[in-house]
Image (cartoon, rainbow, N blue to C red):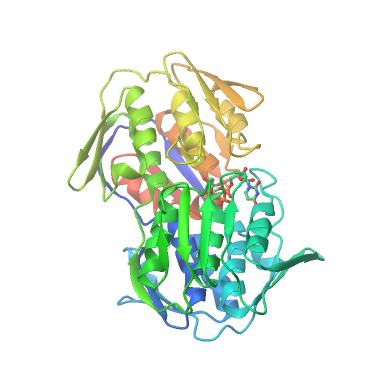
Length: 429
Ligand code: EPZ
């Protein structure tokens, strides 16, 4: 199993290209199930989760090709990937595949809308919490689906097609918003989604669906209106830059010091996080080609944060921010409100010398003047990159084990950081 070795203490200086967003690419790929024509997605990141979803879609009959470059070269550049669901050959998403990646549950929306049926395994729990699917089920029922749970599978049927309706989300859910938007695009009549997720990835999906012929308005606000259409066509659509990768590298610079251009980053996708990072003492400047992040010798200031749905501070940056706060000059409080078990990085950061105590959903971080390198274990995607951030400023060597978590969501992390002067390398085994 690969590991990442970091020797801390170097500033970061240079340019880091920001990849296409994993969490935008995944629902866009799933949207290809809605049409028998080709959906071409530009700026698709080369990540383990993208590869896994490509396999899952292949199981349903989706063909894919990568434009212009041989597959082995494609990882080096932002890729255009074409997905064609000419014929859906299977409407079942089996446990073996769905359990590996929660987002694959989302195929339930397009399969049901296009084929009138879907049999999708319940995803089960995952490291960051129980993550139920009640909102998907209630929402699809509101659109007229008949749903049963049988032997760990959700069986959804709508033999006469889905019918538009009003659905009020009792809780904001990114995934359920994606799924209902996709399903309602092919329903008869109008659907109104209230208290919908406002994340940029929802807007990116709505833009893509509209390019495919859907009639969606209001994405990015809590009220999305979808006028159903009879069929959707192919389209070419671009994946937005990854706001979580952007925030992660901005925090890496805030931690290690230096001056880095985050090339291709869009400040409007993470205003709250950038504001928080600037309050820690880093200088954030939007420029034409992206975002410039600088921190000179002055220390890191403590800042309290509470995670919230967009436009609030994202849960997907909570672990990284905690990594940064471990070396702040004073105490900070970090409260997680989205997932109930997203503090597994606390114990690992403690191995590097961090002083963190947990009180319910709040972590109280007392900054230390120096972390010390140690072997640590990645527990989930964002937790593992928080260990990398801490390792960049720790004295001596940090080895991050179980790097496959990182590979799910960070493209060429070690290259991007070492290109800016960090001592970071992958140890293959
Ligand atoms: C998306 O997950 C992201 N995943 C997550 O990123 C991200 O952390 C999360 O949104 C919140 O921003 C992808 O986009 C692939 P939710 P999702 O439904 O859609 C509860 C990462 O590291 N809920 O918005 O699964 C749920 O348990 C990942 O890249 C229900 O109660 O998240 C959670 O507490 C991890 N019932 C809250 O809603 C439901 O039916 C928000 O979850 C659905 C969700």
